[in-house]
Image (cartoon, rainbow, N blue to C red; front, side, top):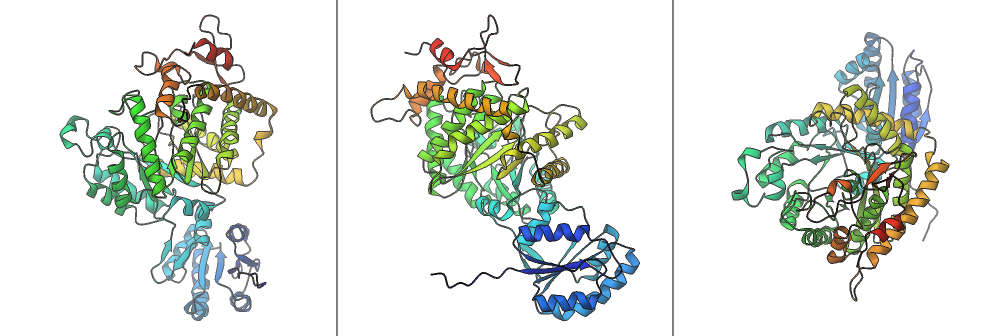
Length: 552
C-alpha cells in the first residue's frame, strides 16, 4: 500500500569559496550528483564560509562540496578556516569534499579534513561512482559492488570497464593488479592465464615447463588465485574473472568461485577444443561440456558470457555466420538455465569491415536475441574492439581505440571491454591498460554528452534487415537437422553437423578436421563481409550458398 511518502534524496550544497569565481567544475560535479540521485543546491561563485555552512544547515545537507582555484597559499588559509568552522558539522556526520587545481588540492589533502579531494583530472565515472557509494569516514573506504550485475546498475549510465591482464610471472602480475586497482580506471580485471593453466591445471604431469607463462600468468595452485584476488582488494576493488578453461570445467569453476569470486564465466559454444587446437575435446564433446558448464553457472546464479561469434569473425566468416552464432549463443545460454547473459559484440571483426556495416551487424544481433529476454533471462551487452584490428603504429592505435569505442557506444553497452592499443605490439602492462582505459573513458563521456544516433543511417538499417533475413535462412537450414525429441539449436550432434556440413564456416578453417573451410568471403563496396564465388568474385546469396552445400 502506498502511504504517499517519498524516499528522501540526499542533499549536496556546493559553491566556490572566498573570492574564487570559477564554478565550471562545481557545475559538472552537481550534474553528476543529480545523475546519482542527489538533490543539489548551488550557491555560485565567491561564497563566504558563513553562508556556505548556514545554507548547509538550512537544507539539511548530507554533503558540502567546496571549490577554490586560485593561489595555493591563499587557498590553504581559507580552507583551514573553513575546516575549523565546519568541524562540528563534520562530527555530526556531514560529508565534506573539495575540488580545485592540483596545487590547491595538495594543500586540501594535507588538512586531513575532506573525505575526498578532486583535482580536475578524474574521469566522470570516477566522480559518479563516488557519489553513488556508501562511505565510511572512519575507515576512509568506499564500498564498491562486488557482483557484475550490481556493479552495472550502480555505475549506470556509464558502462563498467573491463580489460585483459596477465604477465609471464605471478609477482609481476600481482604488482600490476595492485597498480590497476589503485588507479581506479577499470572495474573488471580479466586474468589472462597461460595455456597449461587453462588445460592442465589439475594435471601437473602434463604441464610443460618450457611454455610456462606463454600467453599469460602461470597460475599453478589455488593459492596463486587467492594472492591475485587479494592484490585487487584496494583502490576501487575491481572484480576479477578468468578463462573457463579447456578441460576440467566444473572443477575450475568451483575453484574460481572460491578464490576470486569470479564475476562471470566466459565460455564458447564451438571453440577451445581440437577444432582450434586449444583443448583436448572433439567438437561434439566440447559443445556438450560447454553446455554443462553454462548450466552449472546458471544454477550458481553467476552471469555467463558466450565469447563465440567473434571467433568466426576473426577467421573471416561472412557476417551472416557471425550473426547466427551470436543467436545460437544466446539461445543456448537461456536453454541451459543462465539467468544473466552477457552478449559480446566484438567490433572490427574482420578488421576491414566498415563502421556502418559493423554497426548493422550488431543491431541485427540485438534485434534477434532481444525477444529471448523474459523474467528469468536478462541480457547485458558487452562491446569490444577487434583483437586483430589494431595498427602497429602506436599513435594510430590510440586513435583507433578512441574511434571504435565511440562507435561501440551507439549500443549503450552495459560492459565495455577495452582492448589495449598496444595489442599489435606486446601484451599490455598495467601502465598500458591505465592509458587505454583513460582513452576509452574520454570516448564514453563524449558519447554520453550527446552522441548522434547513427542507427538511423539508411545503409545501416538496410543491411540490418538483410542480415536478419539471411540469418533466418541459415537457422532454418540448421533446424532441418531436427530429430524427434531433440532441439537442433541445442543438440550437440546437430550443432556439430552445422559446422561439419559447412553451414557455419570460415575461410581460415581450410584443412580443418572438423570444418569445411570452403566458404570464400570478401569485403564488398559497402564494407560488409559477404560470400563470393571464388571463380568470378560475384556475391552469392545465403539461399544459394546453403543450396550449394548439398546437405543430405
